[in-house]
Length: 425
Image (cartoon, rainbow, N blue to C red):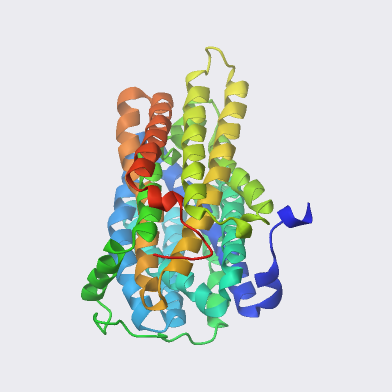
């Protein structure tokens, strides 16, 4: 039983990792609160699922541009400084969100602009932070550290939406945004205490300065790295075809007949499943066929999203609203657990198979996929849901996800044979 529990070695042995982990866990709780609060505020102002989906569009462009450029910055400058500056911008944006709510803003465009600025800062911060870990931890501890990172993010995604729902019901949007601005300081503290981390090695045959020429060098490397590339493609398929977050406001407030707290439960359910999966992650470090584990996990995600759609379609038919809510929460918990396992192995393959000189840029691509993919999925899902309904959107999205994984496995069978003992890009 002890071997199933999370491996806490990185937290016990490395004070720098411990401070980073603690700081980003707290700040991620605030970020998830803000995500839910913005979705609720947009829906409150417009009563439109498509308008909520537009949040994804305004997040996507700065996330893509700054995620790629931020990865280049991380490969050519001190990663601590890059992450610290980006998180300072994110903190100022959190304060602006609180100010607009306190002033009673009713302009949805202002919310879209704040979403764009925050996601631009996140696009720079995330690749810098992710590429820090291989520099401060030995390779054998990376699977455990990634599992702990997924656990922290999952806890944030569970606690943040629940707190957002409760705080919005109790004190309005201004209260949720204010708490987010406060806890975001924790990430700045963890980075401030970190030692300098200048570039370790230079680009061989590539550009020597940060910029989009350097980004192109990263894509050239990616073109020769099928295993790393497949981690991106598989996740894009899952997030583009089966992203359910855009339907949560309508599902919770209308279909299931609840309020902001019910919407918070839907957001948190996937995180509950992810927490349970990572609490039993002790043996993930011994898994050798990590590519196969990723594909099986993504199939599990698709099945869970399909189950969510079935639960929503059953409301006032073969299911009462209470039964449908339980079914929807269980389906999202299953999907979240599968996604957590996939995230651990996708991050580990990227960190171990890629050379240090490319990690920042590849982490930039990674964050564009991980965070940008869901934004595109939200935009597509919002438009589809407007035409066929929220329940059918989830059902057909889950089915499409499973079919896509099957086609990708047939096209790239070598990824299924990836061996963690001999990491090759």
